[in-house]
Image 1 (cartoon, rainbow, N blue to C red):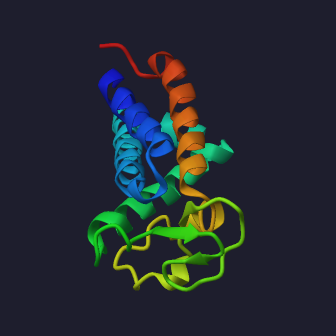
Image 2: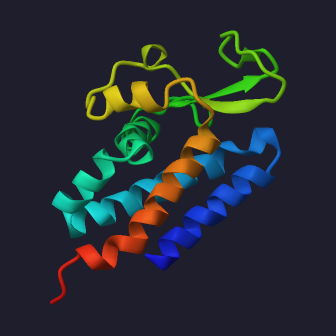
Length: 160
C-alpha cells in the first residue's frame, strides 16, 4: 500500500509541476492509482469500507472516479483528448465549449458529451461529484480521503 500511495503522490506532484499541455498523463496516472488503492480497500473489507466511503463527501466521489477511469481506459478514441478529461484553455475548450476563467485547467467532461457508455456504474456519482469540475483538485481531495481511511484501516481489517 505504501508503494501505491507513493506512486499516486508522484503522479499528483507531476500534474502540479508540469506545463499545462503535459498534465494529461500524470492526471490519468493519478486516477489509475487512486482506483487501485480504492479497490484494495474494497477487496480487504467491503462492508466497512463501503459504509465509511458512502458517509463521506470525498469518499462518495470515488465511485464517480471509478466511472471516469473506466471511460478513460475503455472508451478512449484519441489519446489525450477523449474519455472523461477536457482541457479548458482561456475561455474555450479544445472542443469548442465555452469555459470561463483566467487559468487553463483540465476539467471532468459532462457525461452528455461522452459517447454512450456500455457500463454506467458510477455515472450518477460522476455527474454529482465531478462533472465540470477541475480534475486535479478532485483527485487531491479523494487522495486525502483514502489517506485518512488508511489511518483507520488496520483497526477495521480482521487479524489472522
